[in-house]
Image (cartoon, rainbow, N blue to C red):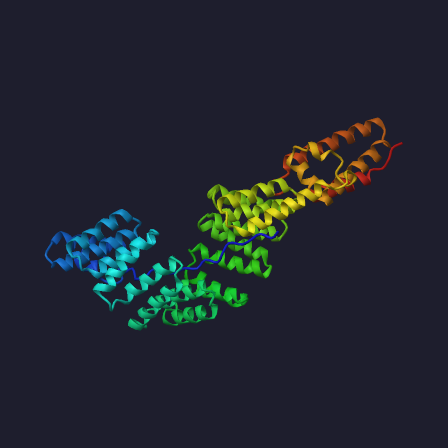
Length: 443
């Protein structure tokens, strides 16, 4: 059972631009000026509203612009309040409907978003941004063909807006039409060479076509343009994982986690460790992923794969059952659970002489269960016990007592450290067997 990596990060971009800038004074014209910051727009729009000297349409637009500035600062309720006021003042304000529709879309309220975008288009059917935003909403709802229809109209109305090509590329990507997605991303990049999201998304499409080197080149460019976005590092980490360059992948996942610790990044790093057969480090990452998000089903599925590889079938089965409880439609977890239970049942029928030196029916420690569930570990345990018994009977009393204490220490340490990231059970058992076989008899 191989771990299943987290999906590539595909970004359907915002459907209208956010203006930013550098002016310092509270100037009402900053409300609608280009190249202004959110704070400057807030101040400018507030001054414009307070002056109360414009037409109702101008005041309504000021509320709409200020609402978007509030949203840009994470103040969603204040943003919605301003947009509602904008529409109270002017119920035919297409921009206010468009902006409120985007806020609903971001909040996952897609039906409300569609209603507002429909109104914006009814009032201003030449608004390319309204068609683009409604396309994004359909994209979010999984209605990709309807999204593409809206993107087509947005491009007809404004063929120079790069983001619409990128958004349509995302719709084609989700439809599995990767060549068409790549063509749209390339067009977005041609019109806006600083569009990091377009590079990231084109890289994801290249990866789907097996063109990992081209994917990494695009991911490198996305990182250069936006070094503070963790998804770019995670995407490149997934490409390195695909190539088998696990240390490079882990380095990228480390950076993604440093920027923003999230369950998906930790799960991806856990997968890279698991592909390296470093199961304890993998389990440690899955544990942390689940601490951050206890409902992240992929971490349960992939942690189960690590437990199964370590021979701890009971823990693997428990994790797979939890993954299925979280998502009963998780076909991969259902299939893996059936395989794990079959392996457990087969091992239960193994001849006891092929088992470890202790009785598996009474095993209580996690390490004992792991040994019982793995034929190679069981053989190592039998060999260790046989070597111990053979040499113990050939030592004088003083050395025999010392060996007994040493063996007890080995078992206690094994029981205590099993499951920790730096403890490799098979390696330690092999070392112990070699030590026992190297002891010379004293009588």
